[in-house]
Amino acid sequence: MHDRLMMVAGVLVALSLPLQALADCKAKLAEVDQRMASPEVPEQQRGAMKMFRDQAADLCSQGHDATAVQTLGMLDMMLPPSAAQQAEADAARAADAATKSRLTNQFLAGRWCSMTGEERAEILFAADGTYQPCFPQTGAQSYVCQGGRRPTAEMLARYERDSSQDPDVIELSSPSKGRGSMVYKRGECAQHGR
Image 1 (cartoon, one colour):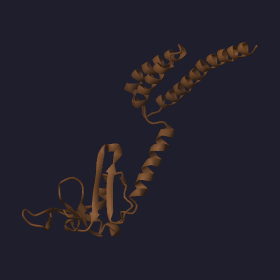
Image 2 (cartoon, helix red, strand yellow; image 1 turned 120 degrees about the horizontal axis):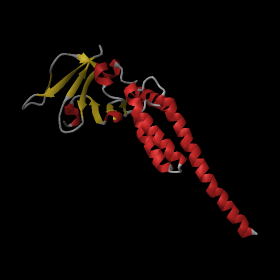
Image 3 (cartoon, helix red, strand yellow; image 1 turned 180 degrees about the horizontal axis):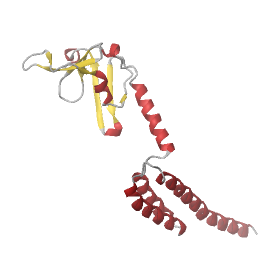
Image 4 (cartoon, helix red, strand yellow; image 1 turned 90 degrees about the horizontal axis):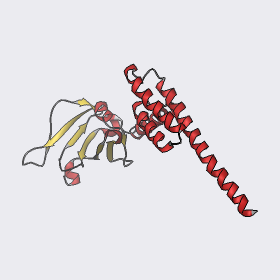
């Protein structure tokens, strides 16, 4: 009797897995359909998207869930973000922006030394919201600021986040844009051995 019960339980589990996978496939298809209906989808791309969608639906109904999910993944990259994805991206941007909130004009005012790479440079930030890059003079230990003053806000806008919490260090980066970190320390480069 015990062996029979175990066999029946195994059959029930085996039958329920395809049903669950089909339900997951159908849920993903419904999400794709909703996103494809968005006015943000260019009309000229709808035909190709529908082809991918219909192919995935056929694969789902035939039990080829892995291939269907892969097809839907390719379609997913072509579609505008879902409401959940947009909310997640908005939350990440807000969190990144919060890391830069300390970078006020008053906080930045003064000289900062670039600690990134071999290139030596200083940035002179002014309390009025502008900055000026400064480079070492040939054969001298001093730095000369060159060019006109530029808006600090424009410079900071190129970076998504400030990863440092040290009051004398800034670590600016833009991970989603593939940019590495730029690290600056408060004070002249001579103070930091550069």
